[in-house]
Image 1 (cartoon, rainbow, N blue to C red):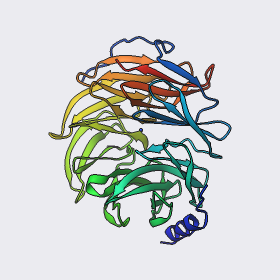
Image 2 (cartoon, rainbow, N blue to C red):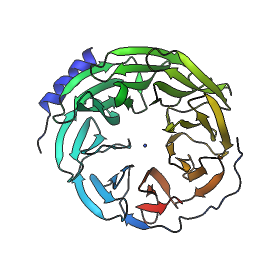
Image 3 (cartoon, rainbow, N blue to C red):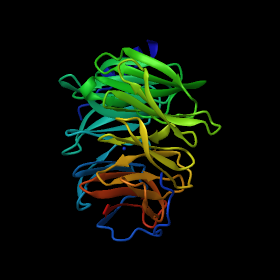
Image 4 (cartoon, helix red, strand yellow):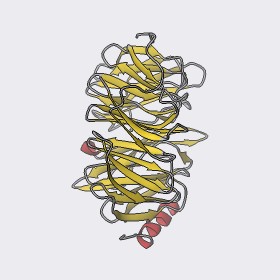
Length: 362
């Protein structure tokens, strides 16, 4: 389409060398028992993968920190970085910044390429498409594109008739991705990673979460805005509904569900977390936090479910029971969090001082 051709041209011409039980009372208050703290001026977003924590901050800086120690590995300069979470794989850090996306070497922070997208860049992801790595990029005005991760050249790009507010959800093992977009209503599209071709698309209820792909199905939370809501699993190949379980309220596009093993977790915008057995399509538990949740990635570990509330608390639940383990107040607003090497890592803004902090999960 026209939007896709503009993006493809921009990528070539601007190439640069150079993440039920009711809630019970739990401890609150400032973070305690931190394993490390590293001051970072005015952080915007954070991504964690294994030994590396990458945070975008003020003064156009991207910092890579050691997840275990907080020691700085490298820093890079990227102007006008956005609030969208950086994507990390074994070799690459991908960030969105104003009207472009930038790929950095994960080991050194050296800039591999930069691609202009012609609009405000949105969520990004890294995945495999066959034998190659693909950088999936979006814009808030509805462009979705697959870029070669080595060069930044566009392999394909498409324009959806609306706005994209959630990062794309890829699944390399099945060669497919999913994206949610808004055009009067909400729409879910599943596309081929190699070509961008549409496998299927469907209109979903307007109060929808971001999508998640797992085990041959797409999972999404849907709600009608009037307390009619559910978590739905659709067949990845056809879009046919496999299962649904009720949820007490609608969802937000800024909420990305989490999955591990057979478990899927998603939270509605009034703060109830639903954990679903995705194999049986049955609710394991629901926990009501009674706190708004508008923008968070839900993270599952072997023993915990972790998320962020709109009020700036980081919440840890027991994965087996849904029991509230901790409601952590970091003394500022956590702009991002992740889990790596058994540690909870979060970046805090409007704090004294602004910082990245790590704590043991258990």
